[in-house]
Amino acid sequence: MTHYQQKFTIKTTAKSFTRITSNVKDIVEESGIDTGLCTVFLRHTSASLVIQENADPDVLTDLSNFFAKLVPEDGSYIHDTEGPDDMPAHIRTALTQTSEQIPIGNGRLMLGTWQGIYIWEHRQYRHNREVVVHISGD
Image (cartoon, rainbow, N blue to C red; front, side, top):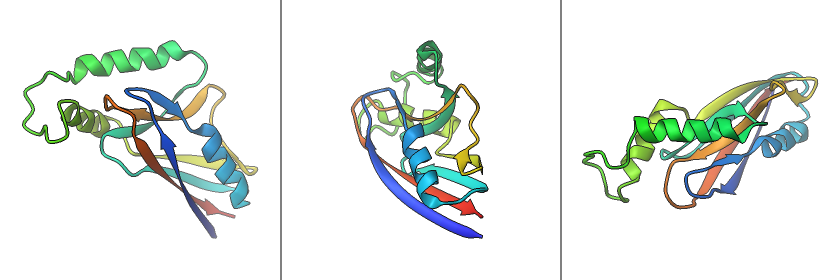
C-alpha cells in the first residue's frame, strides 16, 4: 500500500463556502494511486469541510441560513476571546466536520455528479485555511 500526503492553504472569504474539489482532484492525480481512499482534513476549529451540492448555489445559501438560526451569533456564550463570532463558529464546526473520506477509483475521486468539496468558513472575516490531503491505496 502506498501513502501520499500533501497540504495546501486556501484564503476564504467571510461566512462562505470555498470550493476545493479541483485542488483535491489535482493531488489525487499527482499521487498516482489508482484505487484507494482520500482523506481531506481541515486544520482549524472555526471552519469545516462539507461535501455538498455543486450546481445550485441556493443549497449553500439555505445551509448558511439554517445554521445562522440554529447557532445565532448573539447567544450568551462565555468564550469570546477572538470576538462574538468565534464561539458560534466553533459550535457550527462541531455540528459538521473537519475531515472527509472519499474513495478513489481509476485514479479519480468517486464523487457523485452533483457533489463538491467545500471549506465552510464560519467566521465574519477571511482566513487562510490549511488543508491536509492524505491518500492511501495502490
